[in-house]
Length: 582
Ligand code: SER
Image (cartoon, rainbow, N blue to C red; front, side):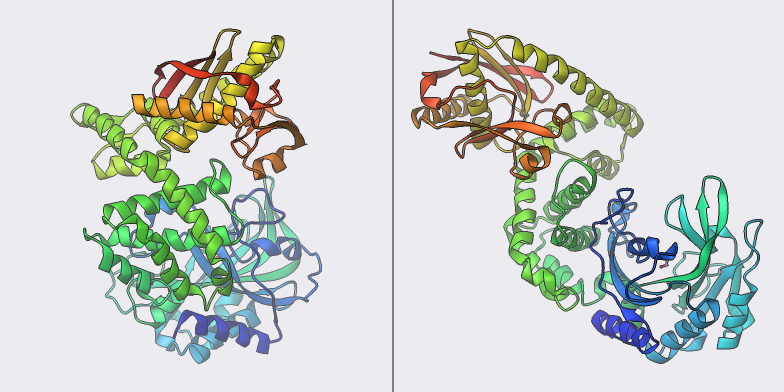
């Protein structure tokens, strides 16, 4: 049975049982700033589990797109996925344990055709917060599951809550017996040796937990979740989800294209590509914060593993086509949004590969230093790899692991936070200083600085970001992220380009808008934190768009001739240019 057939059977079955089919919510939660992505079918339904009336009634069913990010680094083994689809049915104060279990059993055995002998179940064994779930037990007995396949466990196995606080309750879980031999005489569904695979979780949500403990909800709810990819894999008799029709065509294409064989890398590329596409499809974009950062990590890890397989990165567009083709029955919207999905992924890949080579060289340098000396990469090096080469620290960690090394993540975190605090302070001080002197030459140098920043990006790449700036009557000084000394040719190109912008006599426009709008337009900011909600940005034709307090000249033509006097190192991964206007 294909995934789409399982999904359709599920929704139809519950529809037949008087449930309303509701659409999947976006992966990006609408009213819940506490999570980056929807991680379970119940998440968009929390207000209704707490008692609010749902417009579609008290019996609902859907498929929900989910992303769980705890295990990104585990992807590559035979089971972990970051994106997955959860099929669910809900009772919002309607039916409870009896009907829920009866329907689950019927669906599994009659609709999916799973033999009774293949099923084991677990129930809550009881503790000081909630008594033993003898009702669920009786329901399973009545359905036909014998005693020896009903297990009782405590909160660690049979209690469900999203995070620390919220609606929750005891659950009953259904397991599929793959037929493997028990790993030990004690082997049971709580063991993850692979004999028992969890297929469905029915949570009996009648409690609310907060920091003071548990209270009873107004109503008794049922929240269930069945992982589509896993069920498909089991019904098809496959060992991993990567063998089912959702993933197999991409896995095969990667195998055809690869010059180096590595199944983990093929899985990582296949899985991260699908997750990224689903996130982009729901409006996510790569960035350095929150969900944008998760997307960036996924895409960068994917790119790195394509490199490990030695697959030509120009194949990415074709691989995306194949992936969308195998997913479009489930998600027709991917086909519709194909061009934008491709554009975002390929742009991020291009950004990354520009610095990847230098970054890998730098990593090797750092690694060889510690190889025979402690085997731990220090926090500062991890930080530099991130700031200068765009290596997410988790990626440095993964690379280190591949080389038998460790990284000092704890101190990295401290360093990162210190750095952020410092740049906030520095920017405040600089901001004040900048307003103090506004003579004619300084004004010109301000504008020239924007042109230089833009030209550096064109010549060296998008990794160039302003790291500092200082202006006097006589010169500008500009610090920017770049891993290597600039060649004479690069310097010449930058100088020529700035002079070209000057010659074009481009209008310099001051625009005022909301910070969000400015970011949407792609305006560049050195220290975003220093700006309030209303911001000023300066636009120089198509050349430059930057957050800035000014002041600036009105047209670039008045600047004269731009000349680079010096290019030197400022600090690790940061270069400094001194330039004049003649
Ligand atoms: N919320 C439960 C889970 O995620 C059941 O849907 O497993």
